[in-house]
Amino acid sequence: MDQSVSPVRPVTGLGDRGDMTTYLINHLRIPNGVPTPNGLEYLERVEETFAPYGGRYLVLDAPVQSLEGAWSGSAVLMEFPDMDAAKAWYFSPAYQEILPLRTGTSISDLVLVDAAGADFTAKRWAGQIRAEIARST
Image (cartoon, rainbow, N blue to C red; front, top):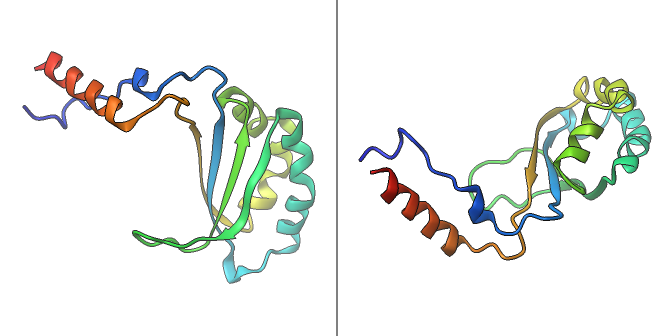
């Protein structure tokens, strides 16, 4: 069977996702490594936009140790109570007002991801994928 035709990713394998934390990951590249005045203004104003949504920094502009592949730049890691809060912050008028201060002065790959549940195991998840593949063949 060609498994590339219909990838199987059972959400149930991610464990109990009750109060699910969402993480924002930003692969950040600042040209020449020095923030511009606009970049500094962004830093001065951004926390007041995400704090009301329960957001907080876990990592800010930290150098990375690349173990596989290439990674130029630094990393930013933020935590939000859930996906809805993270999206509400990102699309809020307050954040949209200052967003060009960052996007005009740096290069970012920015993603939101939900945490796996506390009871998640890769072994159980793999078993669920195997069962789903078996059912679909």
